[in-house]
Image 1 (cartoon, rainbow, N blue to C red):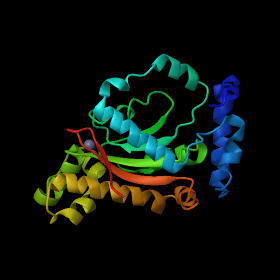
Image 2: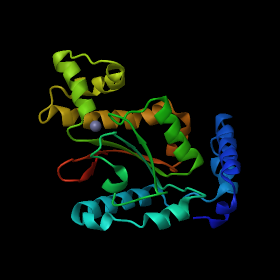
Image 3: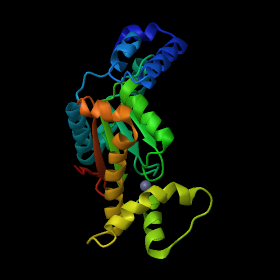
Length: 240
Ligand SMILES: [Zn+2]
């Protein structure tokens, strides 16, 4: 972590970040690291190194969950003035899937997390992930589905029972319906199969919907990986 950046005020740093976003918005996608240089270094981890670190963290969480305790006070102090997250996680809002714990006790300043029911990518999430990758330099994006997901089950019920939902819940789960339709006839658990298919579709959508992320991915600077978390075992399985 670059300690020099801790001397900078938050307002100035945020302005610099917005400046970097401006560069990106102008189509100079190859420049964000230079634009970011004044605010502090991003992580030095490669996409594959970041993925290996997540895998090791999940193993630790499954085998020795007691080791997931962390010194939050020290982390908070170290990360207060500058963040250099080394992985971005799009996960479900489900209370049983906290990414910081699932991946082995990563606390403050390590993971850049976007959560919503069904781990989907709407405009807000897409912008969040673009910011993490292009401005903060996070080299890995994990779309983290999970077993027995309520949002996915709701979409499956739309397919099998034509169920309707109140408020914004129906429109929210709509993007999961094509995944549910695609796996409807497959053997095994319908909801979990749909969760896997939806995570893959969401991962694909990141590059289809964002030229910024597509450019970083094709340059090898960002890796995108769909995965599913097992609520019972705690194991994260990668789907690529
Ligand atoms: Zn869920």
